[in-house]
Every structure is written in structure tokens, then in C-alpha cells.
Length: 83
Image 1 (cartoon, rainbow, N blue to C red):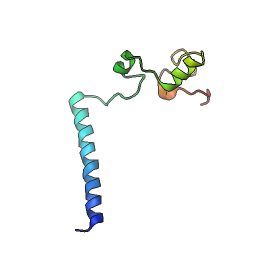
Image 2: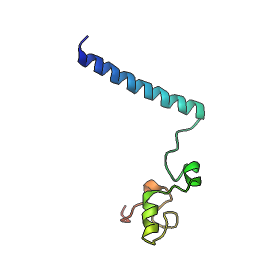
Image 3: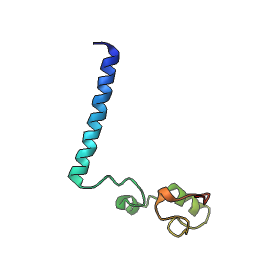
């Protein structure tokens, strides 16, 4: 078998392995993995904050939750206040 074919088959096998792993996680836990800081309760308990919120606190400005332009979802925070 040519080397390029072995590499392609290994890549396909790796992608399939990770897809099955994510599917099993979804089936066992019953929900998607919560990787967003604003929705993950364990990250909030540890005091982990999004980078935008930390920057605003360092600059003595409003926190992400108090800002009227921010929805509380750290992915929605925008330092420049642009939409």
C-alpha cells in the first residue's frame, strides 16, 4: 500500500474516532459540552471570567453582566462596543 493512502486512512480513522467520542458524550450526558464561560457552572464557581470581563474590570469599567451592550454571554462581549 502506498504511504499516502495509509496517511489518508489514518486521518479518516482519527476523525471518525473523535466524532464517535463526541456522540457518546452527548448520548451519555444528554447535553452538549458546556465550554462557554457564561453557561458553565463549574467555571463560574472557580471564579473564571471571560477575557473581556477581566479587561473591563482591570480598566475599572463595568463588568460584562452590567453592560447594556453585552448580553452576559462572553462570546457576545465586545470591547469596542460595535455590532
